[in-house]
Amino acid sequence: MRNTAKRATRSAVLGLPIVMVACSGYQAPTFEAVGVREIERSDEQAVLAFRVEATNPNRDPMELGPATYTLSIDGNDVFTGVRSPQSTLHTFSSHAFELPAVIPSGIASSTGEITYRIRGSVIYKNPGALADVLFDAEVIVPEAALNLTGTIDLGG
Image 1 (tube, rainbow, N blue to C red):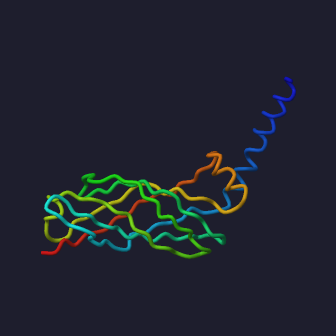
Image 2: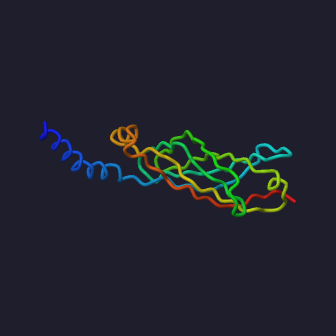
């Protein structure tokens, strides 16, 4: 019984580098802010959609999972959310998705340009059967950084 446990432990320790090499051949997706649009406005708040372009630098398609993010306007955190792009990035290609955010009326009623920053992460799934197993077992759940900046024109 003791030898079986030792062999299992040894196999796990020796197999870890193989697993890491098998999953490290892929690059994380990259993200770029490409626009903002107003969805809705009331006296209390405005709902904005931040358009993000995700790019897959790999030769195989890659699934995007949930994005967890915080929106800061002029240096102040105003919204935190989770949104799933529910998309697959095809080989060496880009795909746009939106991250919604609610901003308070004090900011929404401003005029002119204001700066924003969205920071957080997006879970993604590496291609391949081994990556699927490790992802589903929550052994390796890769995340790509989300760090977007831009301006919002609130008119004048």
